Length: 107
Image (tube, rainbow, N blue to C red; front, side):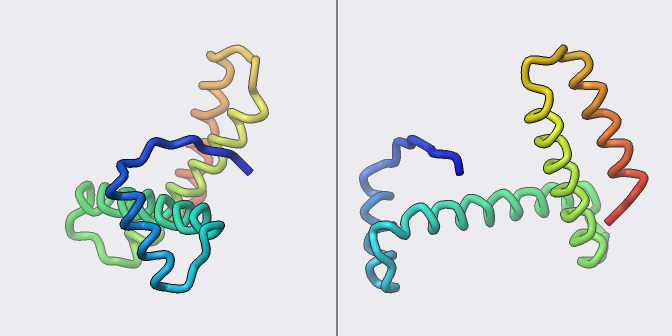
């Protein structure tokens, strides 16, 4: 698990903590709340970007495109993790290969 150190405006902190207490969540649930909110926002932005690129696409096509994008991101991150300290050109070649594979094998 990764640890984040963030600076949040006081007003946002109060708003989030009041919400958590109103829905019965405890102080320790803040990490879960933030992780879920960030994940939701990333997915929303990916979907919005795809909607902009494919304005007339049906929802099912966009859902599949989001899944392919997430698969690509996971593959790219795995390659980066395994390639720490390696030649950056080789890393980019591996990422390009992964992109080609994901495009050739849609979800």
